[in-house]
Image 1 (cartoon, rainbow, N blue to C red):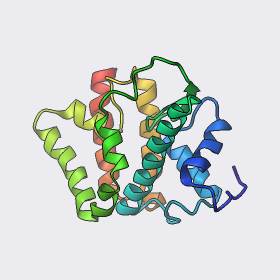
Image 2 (cartoon, one colour):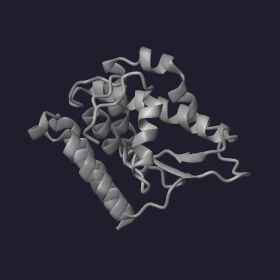
Image 3 (cartoon, one colour):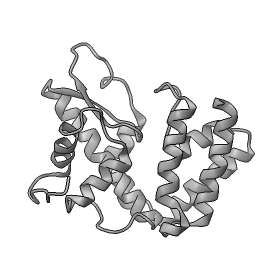
Image 4 (cartoon, one colour):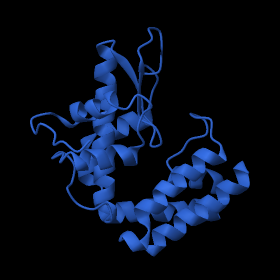
Length: 198
C-alpha cells in the first residue's frame, strides 16, 4: 500500500485496512513495512536497526493487534490470528474459546507499562538470556523464542522456519545497518532448529 493513511485513523484501524486487503495474511515484517510505506504516524518513523526502536515498533503493533482482535470478536465480525509469521483475519465462529483462555502474551502487550518501562538494556538482556538458555540445555526452546515461533501453537516445519530465518537475516544484516552480533545469534538459532526439524 503506497497511499498515505488517514492520520485520524487509529493504528488498529490502519492494520484492519491492510489485513482486509490481504486475505492470505501478512507477516509482522510485511505489516510493519506496509504501515511505514503508508506513512503511519503511530509507530516510530525510524529504521528498525536500533534494538529499542525495533522493540517499540513490535510492541505497538502487537498492542494494536490484540485490541483489534478483542474488538472484532466482540462485534462477532472475525477472528484475528496473531503470529509473527502470519497475521490473518479468519471467519468468526461462535463457540471458539480462544479468547476466553488465559493468554500471557495478550496480557503483556495490552499493558502499556511494558512499553514504557523496557529500556535498551532490557532488550539487550532478552537477547543475552537466549545464550544463557542455550548453554543451559534449552537450545530448541530458546531458538524458537528468538524466531518468535511456537511449535505448540502452529505446525512447524523447515520451510516455515527458513522463511522466518530469511526475514530475520534481511532485517538484521550488517549490510543493512544491523549488528553482526545479532546476525550471529540468528545463524546459531537456525543451526539448532535445522537439527530438530530436518
